[in-house]
Length: 361
Ligand code: UDP
Image (tube, rainbow, N blue to C red; front, side, top):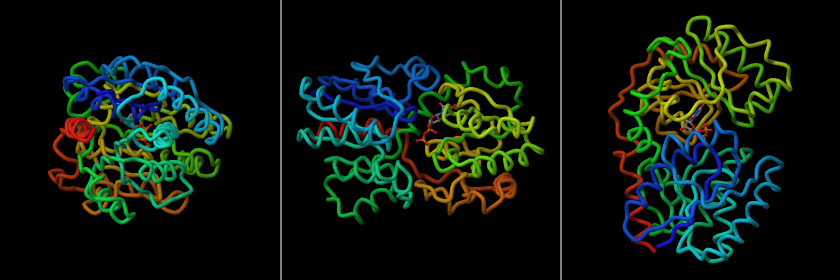
């Protein structure tokens, strides 16, 4: 069986690392891996291929930047050409980016069966480009791998047939478990940044609604500065966020206790996550990784797709421009959630996905 996988952005490299591995362990399965080029900097792309042993892409489309429509359209065109040439048995897409939507649309227009890893996630905020990508992808695909019970329910509520939906658990847990030991033995990031175990907060920011508005970004930087008065903050800064901070002339507003670094690779981020006493983020993946590492999280957004982390106090939202980041950080630091709850499966989600693809097609 030939699987045609489409990836292009950082979180997709993490997910594909474990799913590709599970697929390759099945006899008679081959993969045609397409990198759309959406993320292209070495530290946003190449480092994940090297550290996580992701196979070299069969094709790199080199498509990045520009408007959402232009980017998605160019990807659609190129993926369609490749699908016609390669005649795969199915297409596999991940998450919620423009690469995800382009892969799902190209497949469905050619009647090639398509599967979606991380199906059924919703923020209920249609202004988010990712939300539209998720909804359209789920409704274009034939097999939906839902990580959580909530995601399964959501797909049912949207009228998607039960037989299309498989509850798999979360592949990011597989990745965190698979690379945890290697991160502990290989990563030197704590020494490089002079950090103490449990002596800092880790922060990432990249969502359009946070970084594309000068007011919101300024508010975030001020709030992080307040947290940093008591707890140093490490901020591996996403290229988009850095560009906006420069454009809005906000670099000088950064408190000196906020340590800005380039984006780090997967082994280093796992080490930072497990050693932090607090994670503050607008990343979808890092909210779950905080839970995997038993570190309380503050999500710098008004809503989250990963709602199962809220009731037990593993995570809390801080509404930008309305609530106080430092108050929520204090609340998180003094919380004592039950880390033993099973929300994301047992770390074998990628195996479940590989087997379901083989059984289905
Ligand atoms: N990540 C990383 N290096 C960093 C920041 C994040 O390896 O400097 C990882 C993070 O641990 C997670 C993934 O990138 O596995 C999440 O990607 P991102 O936050 O870009 O996307 P989202 O999850 O919000 O879709």
